[in-house]
Image 1: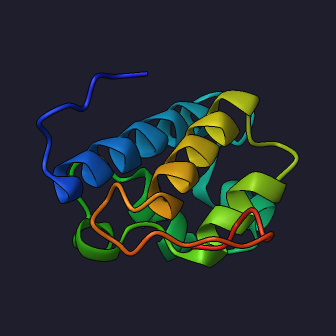
Image 2: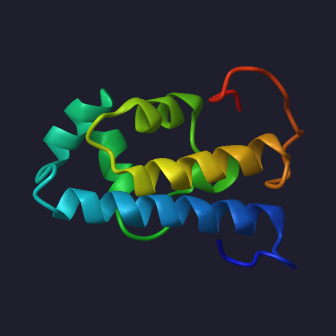
Image 3: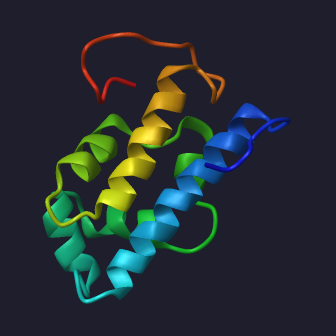
Length: 114
């Protein structure tokens, strides 16, 4: 786990999201998915959503609020998504729930609650 001491909350969030996005790009390049269409089908989201997730560089959509609950749920439930990516998503989710990204800390039994 990277050392994030001294990072601003939004910088921390963007860095963690970029790690998830980089891992998704690797999966997309592998034979596991091969195409944006196949990954979109596996995650049950639109191709444009997958393009936003896997496009190199910052995506404005994720800069301010982070990953949506829908995307988090789909990444965690998808069978073809690697355990490495799921671990990154769980780490992101635990930090978000703890309020480390500048959001209010939240509690609850739903593991995808954000």
